[in-house]
Image 1 (cartoon, rainbow, N blue to C red):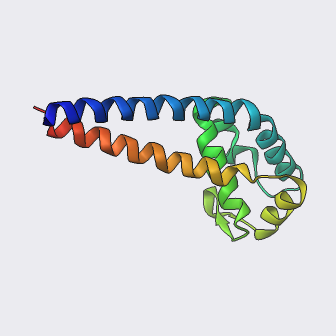
Image 2 (image 1 turned 90 degrees about the vertical axis):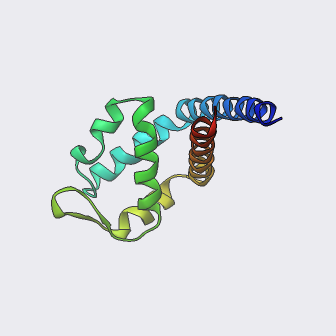
Length: 130
């Protein structure tokens, strides 16, 4: 009975991970350009330096999550500590909200939590397996 439950749970977890991976790449293909333009605009306005995000932009899809999280924190319009003791002012978030529609970031953030829960369940099932 327990083996059957574990097997069914593992199948659902793997299906959930595959679906979330497909959604992740769909978001990457759809919103990468918008995110790059937004960071370029912030750089032109002097809000951020190239060093703050260029490494993650060069990573492509793997760095997309970090750039989305950085933009999510920027959109909160609170001071955000950057590298080397510098701060990102709330005006940068207000500027981004006035120029772009980032309503998709909240959904993407929820997807990240969903993946974290699936990974936790996967680890629990592997540890408790015999």
